[in-house]
Length: 462
Image 1 (cartoon, rainbow, N blue to C red):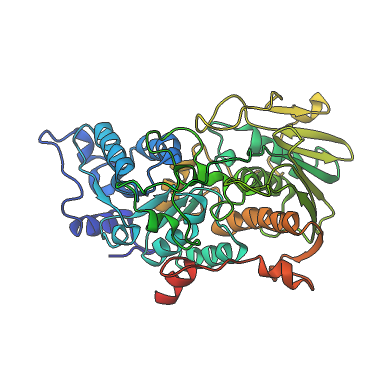
Image 2 (cartoon, one colour):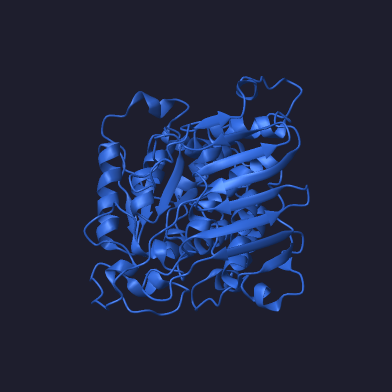
């Protein structure tokens, strides 16, 4: 049974559970909550796809603490990680839930009792399961960045929007917990407290080169062929994939271009999203970009090193992105500036260290002390990222991020990366999503997708 915006949550969940025998086993002693608003028949049945570092440190805990949802299924290509996640979830529920496990996300999506999926896979494995889940009638949470290419991102936004699925991306900087300062900074910028905005400076970290490319035997617990997905075939080495004896620490794929574009999207999709929020350009993109970047000539880890990018927007604002800037976002206008970054709190233990700057600072105290009046711009407010997504599922109203907002923040980073790769100025049409008179740049908007994987194949066979 599939939901629609006009189907009540109670009717939908009850109908879904009828076809999901075996997903949940209730304890012998029935708690009082069974008869209340958070009764099992009202809870959102969530499956997690990807059980690695981000899932364990952020996304699973983020859903587990929400009483309106139940994690009932898990999927991973590494059976060791899958078993650890199953034990973690079942321990959390103290025997009240028996979790189903899957090695193939496509089989998981066939389960009628699953309402929604949270996707915490590597970057190159984001877009495909989002598109497939939306086509299967599931609501979707996905880690950032939304896509590896502009082509993929457009497919994701169009498909999720057309299927009217509740959606959220891992842009937790938009939620007040744990960082309310980002919304505050954007509201001040949007309401003219800096005067006419003219420049936004985005500071991002970089990853080191290196890595051992020596081929190794594929571990028996890892389905490496599926892990590679639509990317080119490549010999297995542990530093290409993820550590076999640990879930903490940054995995090797985060530094390899077939699987990620590097920090320009990994952290850029966070901070560029905030820049767009404060600039009022959430549904568009730059019109011109000029970038340069250092790319290792050898080694397994080949994502960009040091870089500098300048992007001009139609509203007259220039966004500058540089690894030498403090990690965060600085809005500059003709009457002052405001800088915002994360404080000491980390989403995962392996997050880059805080820049040492204040979480919220301005050129003068009156900017920070300014009151946003009732008749001024008040930006979307959410207390908790995962809770906001689940509320969106219940109400069928938008969450903090829409598919198009997520695509535009990611695609701006991808436009920057293309300019960095080519090392020259490019003109970008954000409406047509193409470069003007530059076939080489336009060719980099997509990548070949090796069958049977990839968004093209999912849409072709839908």
